[in-house]
Length: 144
Image (cartoon, rainbow, N blue to C red; front, top):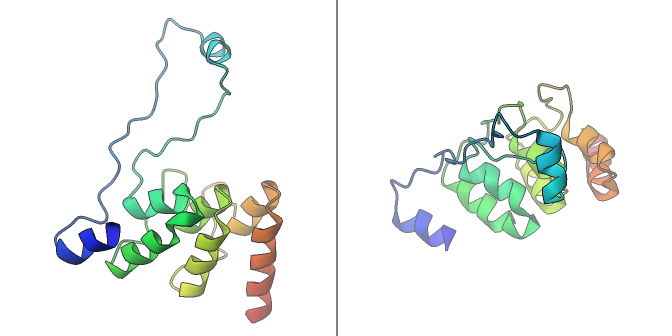
């Protein structure tokens, strides 16, 4: 579906940012009580300002064809989120190894680039205990 939209709608804005707003708790409700009553945790990842490419990278390995289509449609692969995470970091955070592999092999993005916390996609894979992602990066280091 995405490929057809991109093919027939040349003026489709592939870099349009998501309109989701960051969740802000009511000032009179304690966050801890709200979270515990909902069975939640302290951190919920927001997709504020994500482009379609960033959302596809976050969505799962089944989106690898969507990532390819968006890149072919000149989606901005250099865009980062508010924390400095590139599409590669986003894929790593979600353990989307097929997407990480595709993005890294494209050669357009610095696979050892760091976000604002100094993390690389490799260090994110290590933190998440994503051994398949770590193995991918070991292969890239040998190719360098």
